Amino acid sequence: MIQLLGLLNNKFVIFGIVGAIAFGWYTYTNYKLDKQKDQIEKLDFKVKIAEANTEAYLKAIKETNSLIQKNTELLAQQREENEKIRADIKKQQEIFQKHNLENLAAKKPGLIEKRVNQATIRVFEQIESETKEFYEKHS
Image (tube, rainbow, N blue to C red; front, side, top):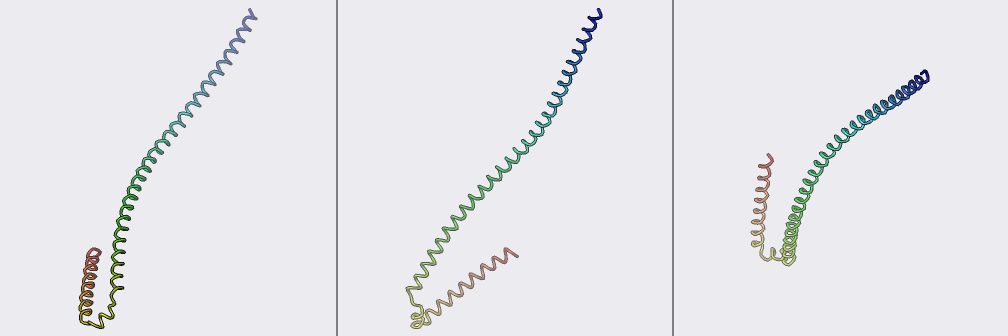
């Protein structure tokens, strides 16, 4: 009977050791799982922030592209206007190159003087009008 108690004692010791190992493993894995859950929550939060930032960046990119498109259209319009102005300047230069105003002024001084004075008055009136509009807007 003493031998039987010795075996039982050994079985209880082994069972106790196995139980302690199982409990330690269970506790350790739960600790690891809790730690991983915390890491997952932190990563989920970071993903949500990244998604929000991505949406904001995409919106900003769309707005920037829209502004670029508008500016491109405005530049094209400005180029067209500049080409028209250049053509007009070229036409006026050709007119002045064809006509010798010095000879005409020497032959018919009254005709040239009258036209130059009228044109000067128109230019000054135009300058006065534009500066008046400018100062009314900015004062």
